[in-house]
Image (cartoon, rainbow, N blue to C red; front, side):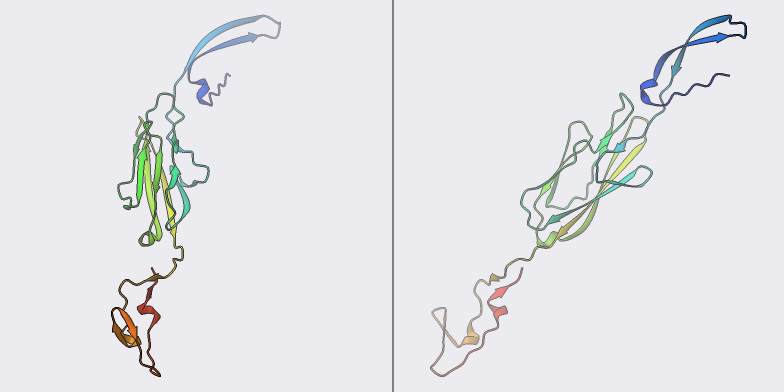
Amino acid sequence: TLILKTEGKERVGIQSIQLRVTDLQGASNIQNLRLTVRNINDPPLVTRENAALLRAGVWQESIRVNQGQADWKLNLEGVFKDADAGDRIDQISPTDLPAWLNYTPSTTNTGGVLSGTPSNSDVGIKTFQWQAVDNAGDTATYRLRIDVVNINDAPELQTDPDLSGLGKVINGSPSLDQNASGRLDLGDLFQDP
């Protein structure tokens, strides 16, 4: 009985095997064989260290970005790889990115760069998905969950606030008579973005 084990991509191709048979009296014979080990397609993989495997072929990574963080970037180059020599990867990028987020795919179709500056209106959690497809049609899916975190903004002075609660407004300035009182709600002067 001869059992051959051909694990690993390094064994794909033509392999030379030498068989030696020896009987109980010590007589032997040698036979050289050539064996062709055929490749079995491996699907593409997601290579991001912080991406967790959710189920077969689907990975997810979660990141946090501060609202207002200027020129934020995430390098996704090499997010996909394929163990099969010569396999081409076609990348399907998300089409539903918000206006603040730009994606520049790499020339190798194995990732790209996300960049942008999220504003107050972008605060919240959104998930985006990339997919890689190899020559055999097998896929890998990378989901990126972006949590844009609100950063407290300082109150801002209203433009042209209504100062009439303080008294008569003369030449843009409130005027009060001696021993008079006026009331102004600070919400009329400032707004919190």
